[in-house]
Amino acid sequence: MKILLYGINYAPELTGIGKYSGEMFDWLAARGHEVRVVCAPPYYPEWRVGDGYLGGWYRQEQLHGVKVLRCPLFVPKRPSTLTRLLHLCSFALTSLPAVLSQWRWKPDVIITIEPTFFCVPAALLLSRMTGARSLLHVQDFELDAMLGLGMANNGRLMAVVCQTVESFFMRRFSAVSSISQSMLARAVRKTRQSVPLYFFPNWVDTDFIKPGVDASGFRQRWGLSDSSQIVLYSGNLGKKQGLELLLQAAKHLSSEPDVVFLVLGEGVEKQTLIEQAKELDLHNIRFDSLQPYEDLPALMALADVHLVIQKKGAADAVLPSKLTTILAAGGYALITAEAETELGLLCEQYPGIAERVEPENLEQFLASLKAMLNAAKTGRPRVNMKARQYALEKLRKEAILQNFDDFLMSLTSKSAPQKSNPREIY
Image (cartoon, rainbow, N blue to C red; front, top):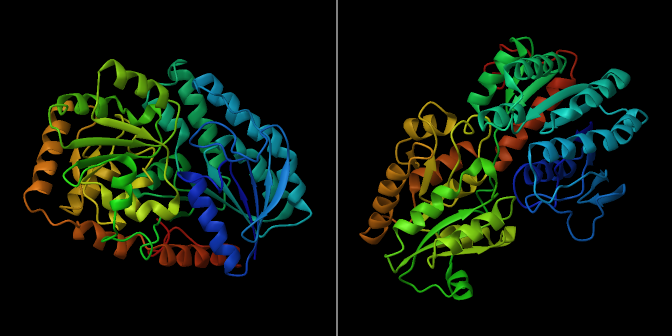
């Protein structure tokens, strides 16, 4: 089967959408499919084009058996609403000829990744030109996230126009998939139940990410004593995370000599957070870069508490990819999310899998964090087996990708999947 992936993010990005798209197409290529990718140079989460790549030129490469065509784009140093829109539009424009040129190759399936929704018209046009089936895979509802975080200030009329256009294009796909049930529920409303929907969650390699790994190397590297209690945040340092809450918690716990906050990652807010930490005179917080994938098991084992932080309004528009890794490692996670969101329902349905507090509620956050640190001191099991078991049952990479492969095969068959299929179609 010939499969084309069209999306802005791809490997070798270490986190977020690029990580999952890269792993997905590596897996499909290894299973004998003929696969191609149209994407941008790696730039996320650092918001700068990766070493060895040029942001202003086209480039073709072979990556783990996948033919990858990189298209130039504008990467702002300090993304704002306007510059982020320019960033997304620039890729949609430069990638247009690269995508349409694939009509000669005639793919069987075109998978478009959202973000960015700006790529959708070109993907649907190529589908019409070639007769290929089209799948929109939603990792983030970028418009919903933007509106939920108050980044769009053009009023209700503009929001209605954008949502109408979004609904129009979504209904033109052969199928739509997403990473959570709550996001699929949004897709039902957006498509008016006219398109088959597929539940395609993010996954984790549970054979690689597992409990019981020695973390002493990280303690030596960062000069952490054996008695240090580690509160870890690893991932994107952006606006939607609301990491000011972490700084406030570090300030309140600054008198606890053994508590150390580690903030690992890149993003538009990193320098601001570093400056704020200096202003607050926080000696119990350290910043560093994202760690290589091969070091993740040890990094996960280092933490006494893992933080998954988001602002209000973001939790159902986006689902943090870092959580799958925490669960597979049997980590103890403190999550900020409203009760009715996907993360909130997860904590309710699987008690003990993680602790949840309301977003932007410092009092609740501090109380739960202190309780978790105290439990770690007083004999709590080192491994959260409820989290680990959930990962083994629900998030195994091989099982999820095999089901997705089967779904793609059914999508290209003469009898396309219908919404009533209870196993795969929402």
